[in-house]
Image (cartoon, rainbow, N blue to C red; front, side, top):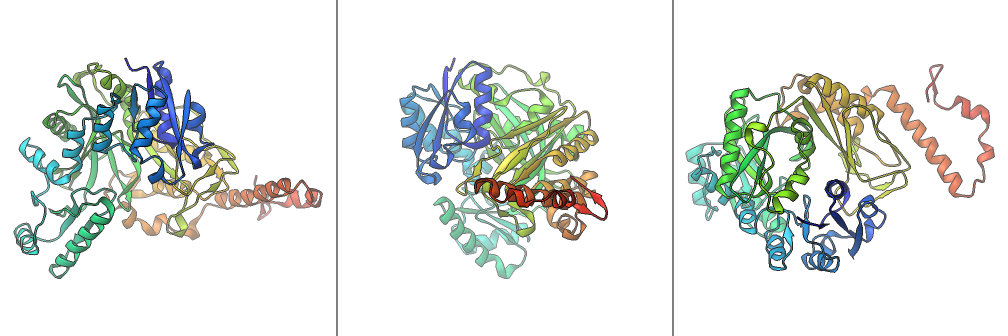
Length: 502
């Protein structure tokens, strides 16, 4: 068994992995940049090692520094988390050459499934449905026009090495085809150093549904049910839930079987995710495979009852899967909200800075996967996600009620957060009814961004936050001027329409 794991990541996912390591009796090693010296993952780990300046391309993305840190601390294995080097085939291969276990799939699998064109071809060969489109890189404008004439507009131009919406263009009009292809190629080259693009038929009103899979080195593969991930902004997921309110039992069974077939087609080992698009007629198509742990994995853990990180470690240790497909059953309903340090009223501008005070929600079936604390200074160098708030209920209605209550209790001052925006999502009729697709935020923009319809409670909280900030500044100045705050002003603070709210 693995005895010591270096986590090649930061933030909440590093804390998440460290917790599973401790429960398994495995030593953990944290790596940190200059900006992360005071991060909780550094405090929680058994050991911590400095790897460089704050920019990720000088620290967390430098393979040599990660490998050197693993050697210095005598780590048996490296867990990449998600993002950074988690889907880097060169990193996986380098770990193998250095005699360090990479907790994830082999470099060959990462290469095949990381290239969307080769992944599409693998799925076609294994009988997994894919969206109609090209099977190779677009070599000429003439070929693109020929394909689009065959499958019809609208289409999506996609980068083969893409992700996060980069290198992607929706084409609705014939006169925009050539310019869109060139723009997608240019963005793909700038983002991924690879300008290969392909064409897919555009699926209108698509639902983004993914299946969690686990595979071991003995050829065993199972799926752990689905996650509904259609609430997205700029191709980034915001709220996820499991099970999906869209799927019928029959469709869930069929999609699960195809997800397993997709993983078996590439001899997949470890935890991975098969992502599908589902249209309004319940036709489904392979989208891509993520060869790593997903941000939203906790909702699967909540409804299935499996620690996915521990399963990853067991598989990497050479053990067989601990469960068979017949052992897997979804119980209850789980929802995850991603809480960001960003200003939803200002085009979601990131809001890094000092957290003055934070109160996390507690209570039955509430989980917070985070890494910040009161007094923590959120750095501007990384993704502004503060935490993931996960709730479980016996059914979807209870889960929604619990999530709204948890969001109400979640208080953060000092930085702007997306908490109010998330609350509005939970209140939107389309979400409440479970009838939404990837255009949800766009379709409900007026409801979600109706600034004049704010709850008075939030105005009071904002006023209190300003007052706390004022007190903090006075205290930092040595307490001078505290006497100037008279009892009359204190008593009247927060008074509105004759009601004192605190």
